[in-house]
Every structure is written in C-alpha cells, then in structure tokens.
Amino acid sequence: MIKLYANKFLISVKQNGFAWSIYRFGSRYSPIAKNFFLSKLKKIELRNNIPGLNTFEQNYRFWNDYDWKRGGEEWSVDKEWKEKLKDMIITNEISNEDTVLEIGPGTGRMTKYLLQQARQVIGVEISRKCVDILNDTFRKSDNFTVYHIDSISLPFVKNKSIDIIFSYDVFVHIDKVVFEKYFSEFDRILKPDGKIVIHYNKTGEKEGTFFSKFNERDFNYLLSKFGFKLVNDIDPYLLRDNIPTGKGSGQSVSILKRN
Image (cartoon, rainbow, N blue to C red; front, side, top):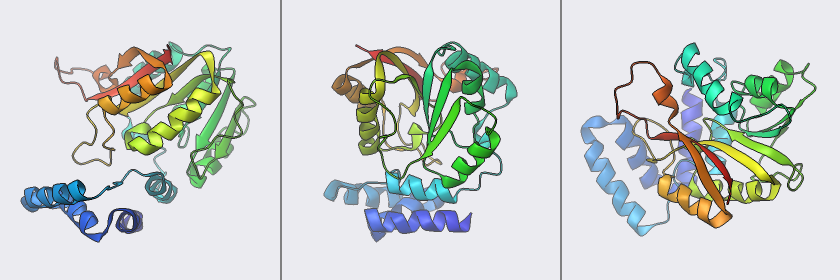
C-alpha cells in the first residue's frame, strides 16, 4: 500500500509539480491545516493548467499496483444492494442478443452478471493483474474476451459493432480529457441504436476519495458534442435500505442513447 501511494505521488510530481502535489496530499491528510493547503492549491491552479490525480498515466500506474485480493467488493455496499444494482442496470438494460463492451471490469465484479445476460462481452482493462485474473476466472466462458490497453484506443473493436457500452466504478476516477477521448471511441464503435450505461460522479471530486473533478456540467457538454441523450439517471446508493429522502450520493449510472 505504501508503494501504491508513493508511486501515485511521484507521478503527480511529474505531471502537476512538487508544490501542488504537497499541498494536495496535505489537504487530504492534514485536517488541521486543510484550509491552508486548499488556499495554496487554488493559487497554483489559477496560474497553471494542472492535470490533477486522474490522468490516464495516474490511473494506469495506480490500478496496476493495486492489491486486488478483495476483488473490488470493497466498493459494494452489501449483497442485497449489489443484486438490486445488477437488476436495475444489467438485467433491465441488456438482452441476450447484445454484444457488450465493458470498460474497466476489474476482477469481474459486474462481468459475471453481464455474461449471464449478454450474447458476448468484450472487456477492456488497464491493469495486467486484472486481465490475468479475468482470463482465469472466466476461462470456461466462450462469450468473453478481455484486452489489456495502455492507451485510450480500441482498434480491436470494429466500427458500429457494439450494442451496449457498460462501465461501473471506473469513470468516477477519470478526468475530462480522458473522458472525452473515450467518448470519441464510443461514438465510433456504438451501433446507431446502441446504449451506454456509465457510472460517474455528478458533483465531481469528493473529499476523502480519488474521484476526479469531472462533473455533471462536463458530462452534459460531452453529450451535446457527441450527440447522445440521457434516458435514465440512477443514483446507485439510493438502492441501499433506509436511505433518508434527499440523501443521494451525487453519483449517477446514466443510460444514454443517440439523439
């Protein structure tokens, strides 16, 4: 774990500069001096174009170094919640005739449900560890293929060949530049009547997380630019039991279609 965060810090220094990196990590881990660090961050960000902590290189290194022994279930609320989520965004949205492209399957937390529902699933993953785990876990599944990528390019996917693009717990960690590059590929590979099922955070960066600053305004800009429309908007954490009214997480699983 120390190596994981040390590498993240070193890449941050390379991309954002030493001062910004010190102030950013200080604002997160030093609550007493938090306001001081935040004021310093604002000054630097006003003067410079700061990529932040969610560039492709940052994510590539972080998730390749990550310890996947819990299989991504550390981000599931509980089994009941996960079943509700599966029913709402997989069972309801995907048919047994669909070819699905999953961005960031991790170790297969949602992939196993996609394989039960879809005709074919193509996984795209930046972590070599995860690719190895996926190939082993689903070695008997003849409707699954996974590709390791080290750039935002999907040359192995044909134009207009995908019915559903699916991604959960991935784009909350992706910055605007990378998000837009992915959308450019989505526009190329999605069938005219296809759908995108994508999870992101409307309010942008959340304290205590590595969520990106990408927010709902940025999302709406991409929808307009690439000709997609929002047809459903689900807050996954409202699927938990006993949630007070109005206490949403700000996160969204957005269902998109072409205009």
